[in-house]
Every structure is written in structure tokens, then in C-alpha cells.
Length: 381
Ligand code: BGC
Image (tube, rainbow, N blue to C red; front, top):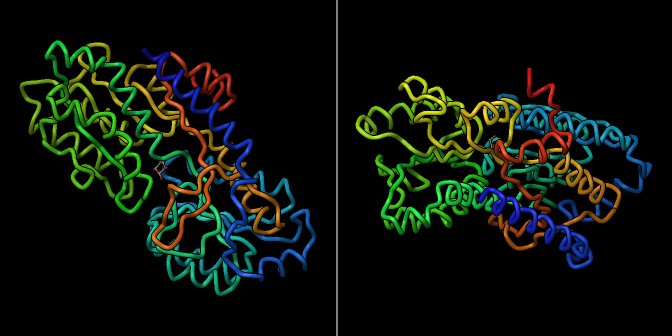
């Protein structure tokens, strides 16, 4: 049944590949955040990127993926001759606003932003627009602004779909439904100020809702809505606290079978809570999902204390984002494969969606090790 999930995802990768192949021509002109000034900047500087400054604002170093994202972006942009100003805001909204103000004052030619709070940057984005500095949204959509030119991300609803399908198939919910069997489940969803989190939730619930409705899945806390399960700033500590509360409040007499989490950090929080409550890997350990396929998560998958994660190849995302930087600075054509889904309240932002892939102990070697993301040595350390 895992093969079916993989098969579906590979089909998705292939069809995405086809869409990409014919994508750019269909997309028309990219909106230019800075009017004709982008052309001015392009004309006054050499076309190989040298002399141009790209400022990259990242949300936090508390999770491994953003460190990889920042490093990949820096390396790829520098290889093209750009000067890179990479800064992390450590999940502090005001710190990110100040960093971006400083980037503008320091003469950035282009801003790449992965927001802490996607709606909190409207004023500073307007400042960038006034200064004729184009903005690319990185991984998280920038909301309520017309200053953004492009968006590079993963298929965020697809992440939720992949997690949902994994749960359905590995617990064989259609069979459980027929037999009148049920599984308990609790939800740990992403940050309410991150558009990705809502999209993931929607994708997940499209797969699971029918099983919640007919009692095949039982959420004993009753917390199934996004509002009831979202966790501000993707906090691992809050996930652990929530899981501890659920275990003591609702699972004294019956085991928790599934932790549907939206992030590897949440999976670590649940793991700690479950260990504290006496659950044992290989005995009564629940199915735990995650996102990002962090090194620690992948090790936990191998050890059995996390069941699956969503692999997001941050090297690919950086590649796509770099083509967008080149597009706004050099007038090149970026690859775009979605011009419909990402409406930020001011415009539908032309986007490139990379394909997320579900990984577990059966396919991590093929996807992660053979794909050169982590080595066997790193995973064995
Ligand atoms: C990203 C996820 C990540 C989460 C927490 C989201 O915006 O899309 O990959 O797990 O933030 O950092």
C-alpha cells in the first residue's frame, strides 16, 4: 500500500514535469513589483549578477530546514555572481521587519522573503516597492501585498494530501470502515499566520474527513478544526504540551493510535510526550506523521519513533527561486507552474510549486539517500 502512495506521488511528479515543460510560455508577462525601475536596475549593472545585491530574509534557525534553505540560496546566488545578505529573524516579527528595512537601506536590488508572519510585512513591502526593489516570496506566501512578483514553494495542499493518504493507506481505513473498526487520532497543525498551514490542513482533511464523520477515526479531544489544532509559530514545545494534555485528559483508558502532525518539530514534541506517558516503540507506539524530512526525523523514522515525513528538496526550491531572482533582475523567464492557487488578497501570485514526497522506512533510501540529501553516514551518526 505504501507503493501506491509512492506511485501516486511519482505520477504527480511526472505530470508536474510535463506542466513545467510547457509552463513558462503560458504564463505571460510576470508582474513587475517595481514598474519600469527593475529595467533601470538591470540596464545599469552587468548581466551576470555581479554587483547586484540579493537580500534573503529567513524566519528562524530553530528548525533545520530553514538553515538548509538559507545556505542553498546563498550558495546558488553567489555562484551566479550576486552579493548575498542572508538574515534570520528567529521567529520575531519585529526583528524581521527591522531586518528588511535595513536590507532596503543597504541598497538591496532584490528581496527574497520567507516570512515569520505572512501578513505582518505589508508596510515594509510597500517601502520596498516605493524603492523599486522587487520581492520574491520564498516558501510562505506574502499576504495582502501587491509588491510581490513571484512565489517559489512546495505544493502546500499536496503536503496535506500526502499525509492524509499515508494515514488512510497505512491504517487501511477503507477496510476498517467495512469492519466497523476504529482508530484514535489527534491533530497538531501549523501556525495560523502561515498560509501554508491552512492549505496543508485542507489537503489533510479532504482525505480524512469522511472517516471522522463515520467514526472510523475518533478524535477523543474533539479538537479537529484548524482553529482548535493550529500551533502559533510552529512551536515544538506547544505541540508537546498539547500532546501531554491530550494523553492525560483523554487517553487514560484507551491508547492514542495516530498523531497527525504537520511538522517534524511537532513529531519530536509528540515523541517526548508519548515517552513520558510510557508508550513504547514497537509495542503501542502510534503512527506519527511529520513534514520536512529533517535529519533527526529521518533518523527517527529509521528507529521507528516517527512513522513518516514529507521530503521537501530545498535544493530544488532554491533553484526555482533563483530563476525568479534572475527574472526580476535580468529579465529572464522563470519557470512557473501555478497561476491560480495563490491569491494573497491583492493578487494571484505566479508560482512554482515543487512536489512534496512522502517518505518512510520503506522508501527513505531510494528518495533521500539516493537523491543525495543525506548520506548513510549522516543517518548512522
Ligand atoms: C513550511 C514547512 C515547515 C514549517 C515550519 C512552513 O511554512 O512550509 O516546511 O515545516 O513552515 O517551519
